[in-house]
Length: 259
Ligand SMILES: [Zn+2]
Ligand SMILES: [Zn+2]
Image 1 (cartoon, rainbow, N blue to C red):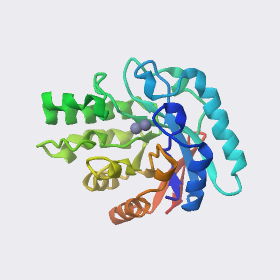
Image 2 (image 1 turned 60 degrees about the vertical axis):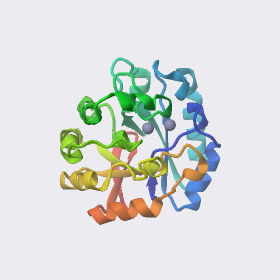
Image 3 (image 1 turned 90 degrees about the vertical axis):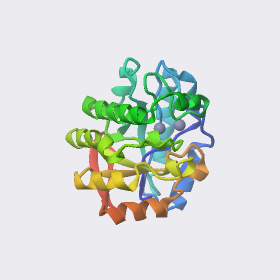
Image 4 (image 1 turned 30 degrees about the horizontal axis):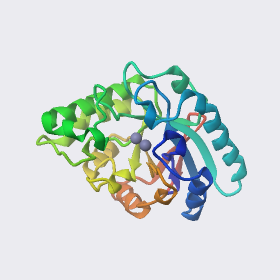
């Protein structure tokens, strides 16, 4: 991936490896612009994220690495922030970074992508869950708090698929993303999950292209060896739809590069 903006660090308590190892892997794979976007702190589900007190050392570590590797690769600083009403904190939303990824990992406090809570899928209407998920993404886009939409159809992670037409379910969310001028992330983590597909799926990416929504790329690496995995597949998918450029951000200002 020429641009890879979604990568984690050990501070989130569910990733491994040193910052340098992630960067060396990215350099080895020919990445030009590599961003860290670790899970931002919040008062909900604190064990899967850094604490507010750790923000400083996270930012210092990434900025030191930016200097250290400036001749080989451009390192960017970001956060992946949970869109969860009542728990978003201005210390994370107004932080000085290159970009913020907005992600929905919770529906009414239910961590739907966490294997610990997979049982709740069996007791609810799957179509209703999917619709609620995309409605939440739509709210997130309308909030205009973020630059990038993280893993747009993460709701498919365990392959509990709806009966209804997914493109229809997601359409208003895509329109809101366009209206808010956000960037859609092509995230390869889905290849590593039960669903075995990237986020978003091809049909949704085609819709996004029709709406002229820009894209970017993310390994969503939680280990150094996951950096740039499935690079060929995701680039091929983006090109097949018609995309030729991807976005990145410096100090929250969007720029594009050809891939
Ligand atoms: Zn994570
Ligand atoms: Zn995520």
